[in-house]
Image 1 (cartoon, rainbow, N blue to C red):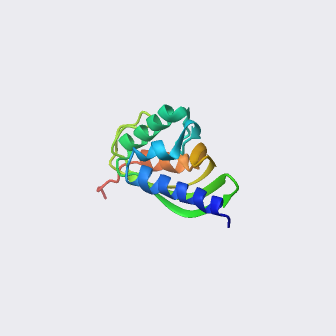
Image 2: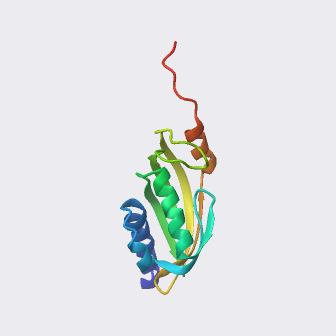
Image 3: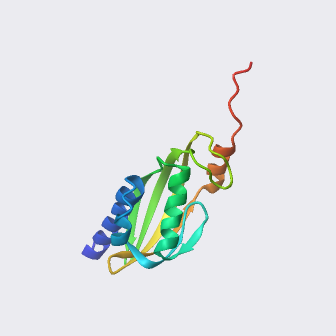
Length: 144
């Protein structure tokens, strides 16, 4: 594996560990290209660092304990693919739905483009249907 491939994988590892899991938002400046094109696991597409940071804020407000577990990282050239499991607790409004307090967990995959040490493209596909089902599940009843 080339040193560029290893460096690109390290960027994605830091992206998840520092930016998403530790909510260290200052990390974004070091990792994200100002003109990023990004499609998040919630199906939202944004452009530019401001759009990206808005997306991060949306996720954080809905799931303050949102955590990305990286299952696999695969890299070739300027591309890195991550297989992920997302977890959190629905504590803020999302998709127009009031907080339920329910734990959520859903799988996803992300493909990143990296150039000059920064992420210039991110395309993330999460199991949004599985997420919706967890949020919209009927409340458990204690009745017989």
